[in-house]
Image (cartoon, rainbow, N blue to C red; front, side, top):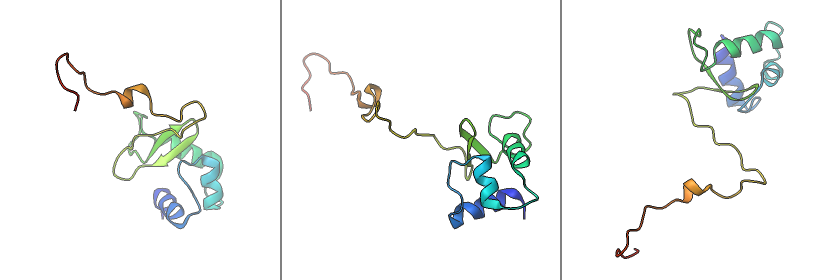
Length: 104
């Protein structure tokens, strides 16, 4: 079984949660054939944005954190912080109301 299949299996079984790091993946696999430097190299080589990648399998969402690609890249939505709990102004923006038009 190749590494992408083993990653999918670890995620499905609940041993690995996305986004994951190379260390998290190494601990979830617990396979001596896949030490942390080799797992890290695999993730970097098969990451979206690597122009030399022959096959893109993961997407980097944060520095050192990856997510497995399923049907294509997903938009990363950062978790809310204490400084940004409300939607940004651009998210709340409404269309322009011209003078003389009724607001409905």
